[in-house]
Image (cartoon, rainbow, N blue to C red; front, side, top):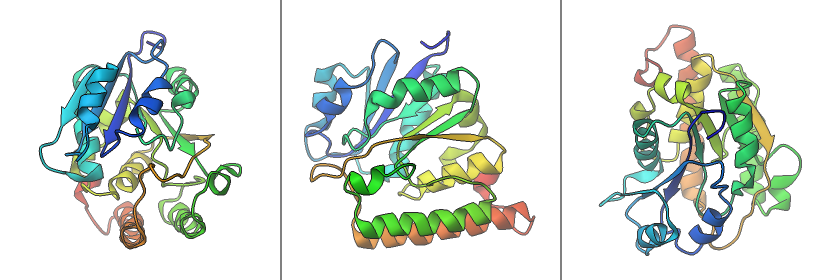
Length: 246
């Protein structure tokens, strides 16, 4: 616990058997009370390995529900077991769990209710092997999003995130998409409802075993991001009434 606040780490997993052990080994279990992993119908032994490593809760989707659907199961379970601080760590070892104490401290001290591990602050993204086209797309989409949602972040596309219980109870994340745009919808909801967001510099690693979406899916995600940002602005102006902001 952190000052009587229950700390829970959630891991959205899909074919993560090659990197799960290395990721889990860096989770500070002296601080983290419980770990939840959701196996989204992996074709390898991700769930069996998770149990072997001692992961507290292993959820298995019999059919693939997508990255967003995976997170919905994780956040609902975290709230169910009484989490006060929830930190999402990808089990593909692209983001190091060693930043968990810093992110937990920011929320636990009441400084910010949301913390993002940013690959763009500093020079970590390209140094860590982020493909140039993804870096350029990240910067382009982030600039447009900052303008449309009237906020200022270095990036909206990191998968390393921490939330207070209040945030997860306030926003309707279950209304979001089941695909990768879920992440973006969630940040849009958080900003829409007036929660402040902190960012910490996060080193990142791109390697063969790390999960990554291809160019086609990246393009689809980019168009989804633009749609979310436009809807955010229309809802703020009262010209739309999207379910995700209710």
